[in-house]
Amino acid sequence: MINIVLSGACGKMGRVIAELVGQRSDSRIVAGVDVAVCGGGPDFPVYKKIFDLKESADVVIDFSHPSTLSDLLTYCKMKNLPLVAATTGYSKDEVSNIKSAAAQIPVFFTGNMSLGINLLQDLARRAARVLGEQFDVEIIEKHHNLKKDAPSGTAHMLAESVNEEFADKKRYVYDRHNALKAREKNEIGMHAIRGGTIVGEHEVVFAGHDEVVTLSHSALSKEVFAVGAINAAIFLKNQPRGLYDMSHLLKSL
Image (cartoon, rainbow, N blue to C red; front, side):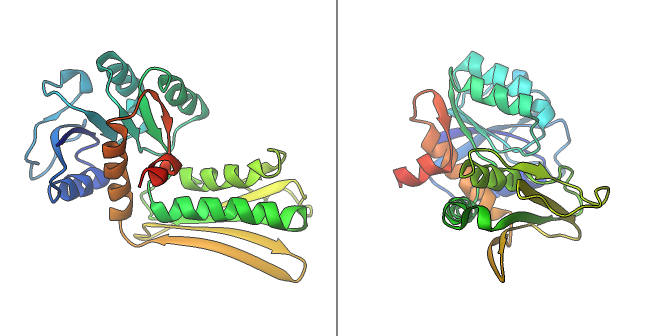
């Protein structure tokens, strides 16, 4: 039985994770952390700050907000606790801090917890390798109207995977309406759509001469991300310090 602390326990993802963990026999949530008040109340204590925790845990899952990262990393390093960093919208400095923390504790960090998205990432990397400079690359992502960061962390994750095949020579272009000129070859276009209740859709478009290759993934519910985060927590419990992502989890299955 793995004891989990859930950061962001009162949010939408936190509620989904709590519900799914409640259906499993290999894990349980011993406490939550959230600045908000959990309407209805979960069946575990929820604290305003992680430093207020009284329960012992094996791992922390964070689906909250980038502003909580500093306290989370400090606490996890202090308690030698593994961390599943599943929040999106991190800045470059925050990502750097996550990677630095992995020198002291096990950290699972990926732009998206979905198995399918990580397969899409691998396929996009392969497509870039095969199609090369003859094809322009554009990435389109769609999310619900409450999502604050744009483009999504997943879109950036996909762009970085493609760009690795071009020795990181491509630059990301987020807005073209101010530039009255043709598209340059060294671009990866990034486009964000926000509306309704779209859970998450991502497309990687490779546009060549007279042909287009499109790779896509659609999430139909938040459960796909919650399941990935729970599996990551179970995987991470017995790992030594270091930085892990979905590729390590998939190899362990």
